[in-house]
Figure (tube, rainbow, N blue to C red):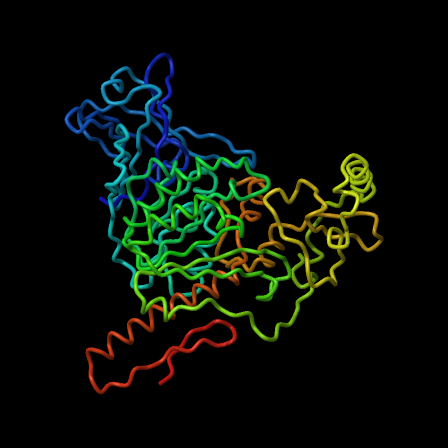
Length: 470
């Protein structure tokens, strides 16, 4: 059977009995539907609980999939069962792992005590796609992965993500790939990939974070082993600029330098690549060989860019919008300025803008918290303002058209996820150059094995599209 997902969680109890709680994301990955009959058995020899949609033994315990209603009214499947017999396999307050397997019509969830090995990881092989494969560590909702895949040269084979909602969005857009849902420190299984994408949490580097340096050093230790387990040819890092000054990043770099001695770094502002929204990030590519190091280069900003206006990204007039009184915001702003000197000199020139502007501020996670550091659309009479919609932000950040949120994700979470994402035009440009590195390596290998055959070069046009020069 094909392993499609793992989730690690801590066992709770119900009516003083160990509880098996199969989360909605796990049920959806297994294809379990509300009302469906499931069969549960325990295997003492394998030390596991088996839940599947077909009978296992004559003594199976039968349950039905229930559901929970989300804030948007959608019904998501869950399984909640507690039995004393589970105690022979799982213990309350101990961590277990749920493994989801699928094989045609058979879906199986195996629950067993978490077995963690610090240095020994399981590497799975995916061979059904000939494109360059990516595995993402701390994937978020999958915006970086989608930008790689939208280039046409890459295909995702798996990801690790702690946040349940973000993992659900990733699963929705990449249903055939492996997903580990849980703490990075608990992950023992990855998929082999050509490129490992790493977007570690940036709390230590962010002024809004808790500066929990020890915690993020622990993540670096775990991440280094997981990266090695993917057996990748290249690592791609995306993060805020200050992340690369942290001890967590330096530790990670030191741990990987024996296998990946070649590193390239570039600071890129999305505005320079045609975006109207500022998003300053630093990107790093690490490779194993000097050949790949030579063949890879970060993209350069186009010399000429037609600056689009905000109006080109706005919803049509048929879309109803919710406007807020500008006066209320200004009263709040002035009150904060009176209490905090840092607000007195804060310019609002890019906070409230009209549709004609060609540059707006970075769209953050807390975009709807109404901050002077964000950008909002002001009405024609200058008396009201509104948030940019999710659809508008998607277009501004060049999110692929096929990427979508499941219906049950709330508006608040949608804004938070896209506020933590990337400008996809920048990621696609870098992805194209990583693809070019693979192309050049392949052509060099072919040329060396076929004497007398001309080595075709790879070219990249102004739009970042690759092609051969014959």
